[in-house]
Length: 217
Image (tube, rainbow, N blue to C red; front, top):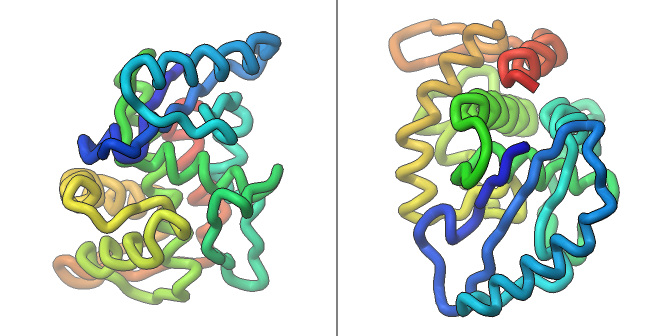
């Protein structure tokens, strides 16, 4: 099991109005009978420590299978390119919630409990998956790291989960290079000149499959 914090608290940018965004990733065969009780206790815990809980979505509790589906873009229309309309709190449903889980796993985030090496592999694979999603949605043929970073931030958290804050910029500066190297390893991208990469859209499906394999899920 992994317990992951994301959002403003994970970025160390919380305010007096912040809640704690939490995602639990459970084994596929985990007993889910305690989900409601956990959410209730988590709300109480947040209030006790001065946070303002999100009573509608107090915590995300998902299985590894659901995270795999998210990394393969379940719930994201592709006709013929991925569509990424803004999603506010009132827009979530049983399909597009996978997009939230993918973005939460892609970071910025913190592993509060579980194997941190496994968490690191999963986070990098999720960031690579989100990067392919952005490149596909924008129909990019070539990109560099600075352009990819700017496009991930485009549209704010309602699009791909990335707020345009200093904490997010620091996170992407630290991790996006490794994500691009992974895109090359799974043959979605290739270097054409120093710092410039060409996209291989025909490899999207196989690249997403290989990213799941690399994540350890």
